Image (cartoon, rainbow, N blue to C red; front, side):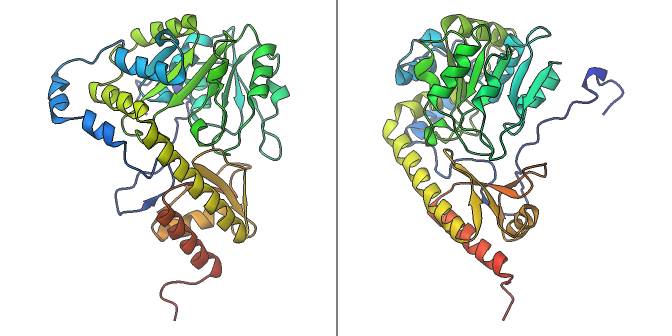
Length: 359
């Protein structure tokens, strides 16, 4: 770092994104992107005529896209705010609802940006360990009088908690914000959006990156009470009022309106997930109960790092975390059936100790 970099960031550990290598064509099962293209409605909405309008600023209030999201979830437009990906929404939340008097609490094994934001904004944080089986103990978050941030389903474990358990956390922390980060909720968990009208301390965060094929467009949103959305918009307009570009707004509006394409692709990913879980278990893997578009799996004898490296050498990328309690596992994005079969074939070759050059 340069001699000009602020000393307050001396110990900041930046978030490490998944690999995006350019040296060859990989089967990418490492960053939880959808294997399907965006909805045809998205491709139609992002037309040459709209590209030509990029000389103009986008709508800072994002009215049409906000309304489309509100209509889909049965809430008012005043209950929705948009971000440049859900990461930006989370950043707004950490700025708006955490300070020296209000620490933040989150699991020790979860989305890496929680700890990054806590460091970046100089916040006291309580990092709560998951149970030995990687489940979240709800009682650990009850009555702790801190801003609570929980990914549901969790990443990288893929496991989810019930709405009744989320309510326990909300009820026991009436004077603190509870954030439920639902990046993967569409693949099998119950959304807490249904609780927003009941609890004024709830923020539900979602993204278009996973189940709506728009990871590269960068679009996330939060649903909460009108007062909380006003707070988040205050931070947004104080940071970047044009945070969503014109084409992303069009893409998001078209994507959320195409319910048939969403359901078709989502259901195919779920089917491919269950198929792959069964096949991995046949091969000696322990697979955690996933409600997401990825699997967290550890082999009974082969180490996680060795498998990751061998798969990469064979042209298949998965995510490996060289951290305590995680180093035996691979996080595997669920792709098409053909991609899953390629993964399984590669694992068969690796686990059998054979090489393509063997006679």
